[in-house]
Amino acid sequence: EAGVAQSPRYKIIEKRQSVAFWCNPISGHATLYWYQQILGQGPKLLIQFQNNGVVDDSQLPKDRFSAERLKGVDSTLKIQPAKLEDSAVYLCASSLAGTGAAYGYTFGSGTRLTVV
Amino acid sequence: AQSVTQPDIHITVSEGASLELRCNYSYGATPYLFWYVQSPGQGLQLLLKYFSGDTLVQGIKGFEAEFKRSQSSFNLRKPSVHWSDAAEYFCAVGVNAGNMLTFGGGTRLMVKP
Image (cartoon, rainbow over all chains, first blue to last red):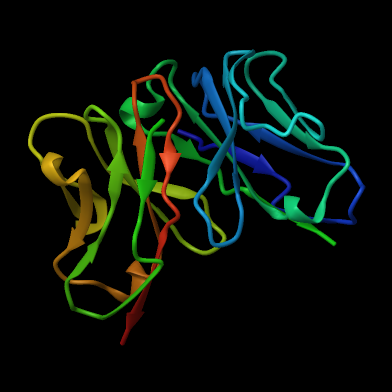
């Protein structure tokens, strides 16, 4: 089966600019996650979707970050405006509905964002 | 809330030597436990997982992990390390089947020839 697709792989922007990341999960995976991984740290959950509804966005900095999954398949994560501390790898993962913690996720390769 | 601690930030072992990476979790009941590996520039790959049953679980690439309830630990082991095992390893915990995973800070493994 095809894996989780993410684009772009790399992005460099100046602070205060906006940026968007795209994720296409594995076919049939109803649950989609966005994680932020700062260099030298473990991944931290930003938002969890079940189909096109938000399950958990408690750690999403909503003043600058937004995410959507309009048709319950692809998802977009946006940062506007970006800050230096947003430099990180943004990982998308997916799982079958209700099984994320039972079987683990499948991760994409991530988008490495550098804010200068 | 659950948490995961990986006490060792960096570990260096010689090729062919045995390996043990430590993971401690904090949660009132038995959580779902995972080990992931991340090679440079790559996403995370699942090595193995545990929820119930035999406390010694086997994973891919010759790795195994042992769940010890009394110590709230889930340490990862490999009897003989290969140079290709050099990567970052993350322990993760989930508290119910549909929930998100919480990750530890990771352990970077370096392998000496």
